[in-house]
Length: 171
Image 1 (cartoon, rainbow, N blue to C red):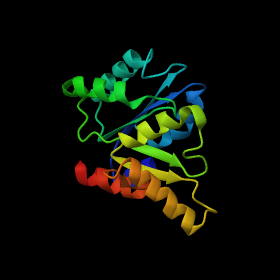
Image 2: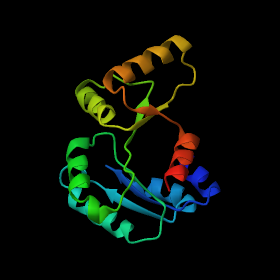
Image 3: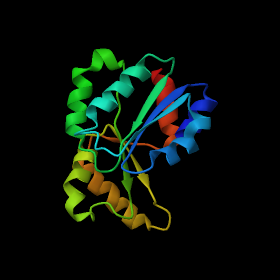
Image 4: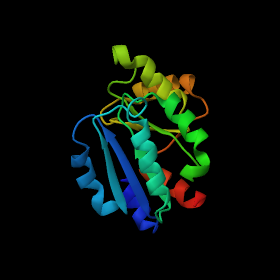
């Protein structure tokens, strides 16, 4: 949805997708909405896949785009990525650099072994999007937003259209 909105604003996006299995499927669904779509498969980008990700970001930095999306799988530790992106900022040419955390309303806080990682992803985010809110009561939505704010009071809630508008203003 965000890529479609960016196209309507005449902004060009490149996309890098990371998935533990079959990122090519997601790549194919996005090809009509982005200038380029690259897949980073089968590795954890915060560990063994970091060099490959850095290479893809550097290659994307050489193209003519307005926005670069790097979508990571849900088990990515944001700290090594943020450190690497900060150290290589002059080569990556990513400004502003936003981190958008997608919060699944159905499962947030209930992922046992991944709960700490989920909170860390939110804690380091500049923005968040809440997915799968349909069917939840106003009280549950309010409680979820309060939990999110307790973890990261600085992050701004957004959605695809609002994020596209913010990117348009920043470009």
